[in-house]
Length: 234
Length: 230
Image (cartoon, rainbow over all chains, first blue to last red; front, side, top):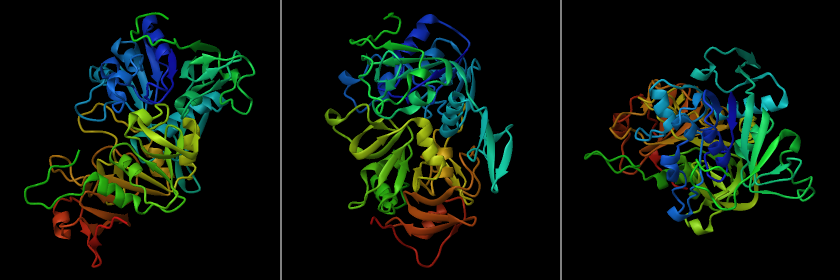
């Protein structure tokens, strides 16, 4: 099973409760598509070092939890490992022991491959990648004298995303940069949005809505009081 | 973060000063992307009196300096590196795919990237440390291709003194032939036509001293100056 994990490595744009739900479910052999393979519960506080400890969200769970629990078969990502020699996150431990595979590509190609899945485009040529390891084994073709590499759409079974408000049609608005959350909406068979609030139909104005509800199959509301233990069902 | 100085060498530029050296060349109206690591210092070194739009990969355009006082920060408005930034009038939020359409479509004037190795062809390696099982490409390949100019801002050597300015990159490439300007903690360089040209030296440094910690052969013109901040 393939799953898109939305957000961009911040407690404030990660669908933490959906991640926790996948962890509780215990499903194994997942291919995770995520811009970062995450830090995990142990390194959670390092994600927002500028926040004083009492303000750091303790209900922050990222895709590294799946790596810690041995649920992953593969990661498709742009940030596979810790950015320093002494930073080793759960996914890197799994890479080192050979229990997971990884495909690393640039963020623009990752984003466009996901967008292509939502938009029904099978593949596209991008000028980013030729001359580097990313292009190995892929078709390279010149357009206007510039080499382009063929990248294919990245579909998933589920897309787990975080938004701010939803209505009962699944229309969404986001708070802050919309990251991979908006990009992944609709790029899977089932898109599930974790939101702060569901508002009555009509409260979200047509010229405000970022993601049309047609891309969203399910909406889950975050608890009003943070739940810091991922093993606790909502 | 700064490299410990050799007993015999002059003082190296502080990252804050390196950021000012990079940012002095941002022109009024430029759209600029700052990579993680050293380049983020530039967010707080913008030249006064110029309107410069800062872009960040996660979908943020037109933000201000990094906010040091967490009580004034909106945790939802962060740039790469997950640092809270000031919201400026005219700021725009984007999705990731739109953010990279903007990059790949050549709508950015400058990107500033960190580096592990830069070579004479302008090849850049900045994604995979030796000994790590995989790399972190991030947005760098798209930025290096799409921005009209790619500037690399990095320490001139590794912490153990190994040169990072090399004849040919040995680490996996992030992007080929992309770097045209290099700012390190000892000087400012242009890269063109298979040559690295020393333009400015940090105070106290001679071109010979800089060549001494550089693997690549530097072109040393007659009109070299001391590093300028403005």
